[in-house]
Image 1 (cartoon, each protein chain N blue to C red):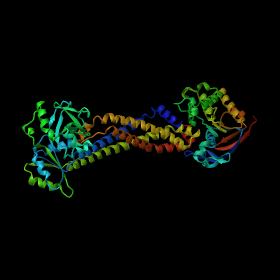
Image 2 (image 1 turned 30 degrees about the vertical axis):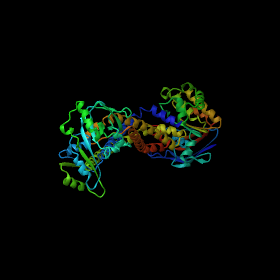
Image 3 (image 1 turned 60 degrees about the horizontal axis):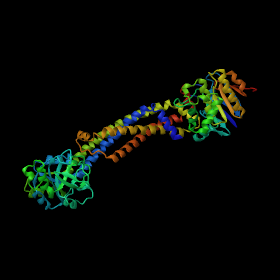
Image 4 (image 1 turned 90 degrees about the vertical axis):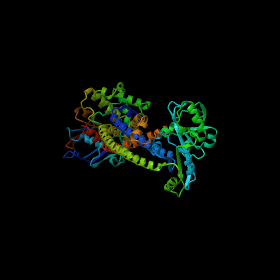
Length: 400
Length: 224
């Protein structure tokens, strides 16, 4: 009965409550959007840290900026040096893991409406892709000519994928990275010659260097415990025959983390200021609303309702109004913020990985919980004060 | 059943003098009492004190050997409406609800509860407004609303009915309907206390208390 009355009252009084609902909607939108942006930037950075996956990356001289862009934004560039670089580094003291990759180029393929990036890697030594593809036996699968595809590549694991006139089976599909890595296709180095030949047959233009068999684009190095980055770099300088540049992924993420913290501060300031302002308005609205409802509250009390019961009843109405407003605010947030995630990432110049469906649900529930809690905090005092007024005074003050 | 006011003092913040000053009264079952006096004499305040909705600054209100203002809020709330019922001078209704709902909802009774709805209808019928149960308050006249107010106050069959100026502003016929009903309640061993300016009420009452400047200046016994 109590619940029915509360629902009924809120339904009937929706016009009375509309101002509160508008404030709650704005508040919920702010909290939800702030949480989504914060969450997406944090995911973007975490994701990038995982993607970097190496202590040092060695790239051809003059390719540092391109390599950094590739790491940060996933923009594919083509730069090459000889495989000897990898062979030499593999023998360095202090190297715990080393693997190489080669970016052929982005080109249109039978499978996809947009261009895909063709990347070659070594399944035996890889530790860069592994975190993204779960528990597959890369070696076994790539030996059997299976390939790994990015998140956006439209494939069915059962049906495989048609690329440059040949059907390939899918060993695994990478999780979403939020970058153009999502549009990449990863072949084993064993397939390099065949893929290049087929690509050319399909009209792709390959430069002379791209037609060479012993080219690679980058070497990823993880260092053994007890060794320093400088130990490896020194050995590179001493022993590599080709000029090279070094990229230190962790330095990149440090800079990004700093930017992220600054953005987070900004978001928190906006949320705190806006939230405090809206809370004050909400508290004021509640005070006014409670004063307008003095007679109603007195009516309940003179008919046998205790202060506690009336307070709980009014509070339940406010909670319901807050939940409705929070739902609407989050709904608007989903419609406005989620589709423009990539644009927001570009705007902040940061990696941005929007939440998945479950993430959206969790953020929505969190936002609703926060709004409801703040709504209760903003209304407890006015409710209690008005409910405590002696019923006769509540009636009398209204001009009796 | 006995209701007593003992040495009650009430002073409002914005007034120099006490609104009630050392008022002591006793009421027993079957009494129909009128409290009379000019405007501002303290009638409404006295009724509010007796109803348990305004705590006097000094003094006590005793209902069946219990000092009601010393009870916990929950215990006092169980007296309101069920043992002592109060009818305000103004008609307090929730404009979004029908009259039937306005009668039942304050007691947290569902309008779909047939038993209670029938009881509400039967009371409204006694006041000759049963056809208005599904109307909204703004569709009713002042007299009809007053009758609905009293109907709400007696829904739970309280032992004491305290009504503040229940006939003020009403035509003779409507006032008669209300007073006749209150009289029947008094005959059923209820205590009925009303504040009024209406001299015609005297004929229904056992006792009339005249009050001036917060003090009871006269008590008159009437043959009914």
